[in-house]
Amino acid sequence: MELVRALLVLCVTMTLFTHNWRNAEGRYHNHQPKKQKSPVHNHSPRSKSPSVPSKPHPDNPGLSTSSSVFDVTSFGAVGDGAADDTAAFVAAWKAACAVDSGVVLAPENHRFKITSTIFSGPCKPGLVFQVDGVLMPPEGPDSWPEKDSRNQWLVFYKLDQMTFSGTGIIEGNGQQWWELPCKPHRGPNWKTLPGPCESPAMIRFFMSSNLAVTGLRIQNSPQFHMKFDGCQGVLIDKLSISSPKLSPNTDGIHVENSNNVGIYNSMISNGDDCISIGPGCSNVNIEGVTCGPSHGISIGSLGVHNSQACVTNLTVRNSVIKESDNGLRIKTWQGGMGSVTGLRFENIQMDNVLNCIIIDQYYCSSKECRNQTSAVHVNDVSYRSIKGTYDVRTPPIHFACSDTIACTNLTLSEVQLLPYEGQLLEDPYCWNAYGIQETMTIPPLDCLRQGDPATVGELSAYECSR
Image: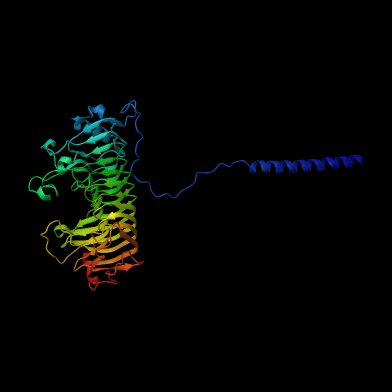
């Protein structure tokens, strides 16, 4: 009997031991970190625009750091601000163009002078033009080579997946160009005089795609600082563009015949439009931009010489316009055709701005423009959360629409504009403008018509094909 009892105790003991061991084993495994599978994300396709390369080692720049980095000084560039370094840049460009992710490097602590040059493709993908020093043209009209075009300086042509970046400065040496007597406000008594008047645009991208322009300081252009014409897929980010307030025709960024363009986080002060949008543009997004002094953000001018102009799907948001002659401006010529539609202006801060919100369908650069019946149709434009101060010399809101082709579907919400100094001299102005106010506008906009104009059925003839 004692033997049976002993065997029973031993069996129970073994059973409990085994059960506790399995519990301990279970606790041990439950507290071990599990290997996680890589998460699966449904990302949209990545942009083809290349990333900015790491800066070469400062003690030994150029080809010794990477076989794809082509330092212009290795090709004979002097970089003393006096020698002509054009040939070295062209040679470095050709070498970088021929390899994947090639880099043309203009290193820091140098001042490179080059003449009017076209950097053309096609090139291998991922090409980078990196300026860490100073890059500049000859100084003034008298130093400009006679064989070179006076309409442009740096041209980038037929490129795909290219980045223009760096920590350096693109210096335009524009002073002597601004002083030409043919320039506005430069002749006696602020009149213009006859004579040669061509001035070079500083940087032009033409018929190119998947571009990125980032990080540069661009200043004192003889004419437009940057132009994009016939381009698809453009990213502009963290630029500083500057020229004096009275420098003529020095638009900051001009875009035409281009689509899918983003302009972000940039500071622009100049003597003309901060950003100008020409005909043939669609899907343009502007955000985080500070303008001023300038002539504001302009759509146009459009429809010159009775031409057709189409602009669609443009958004400007979370931006500041200060000390400027205009704020948000749409300007068209009489006699034009086409349409401006799908414009969104949201969360814009105004600081002492003339013409904070303006549509001018009677734009004319001389006193010889005649009244005409056709016009570019302005339709579906919204202004939301536009706040700040205006210069009392002009009304803060001005809608001057065509006699025959009314502006339609204008929407205003949370528009609050107060005098910077003094009192409002004139009430907001409307002519043949139709839309709605979702909230009360300050100052009151009693002149905006509700509903649709009687001619609305005929406006389809002015629409652009999508």
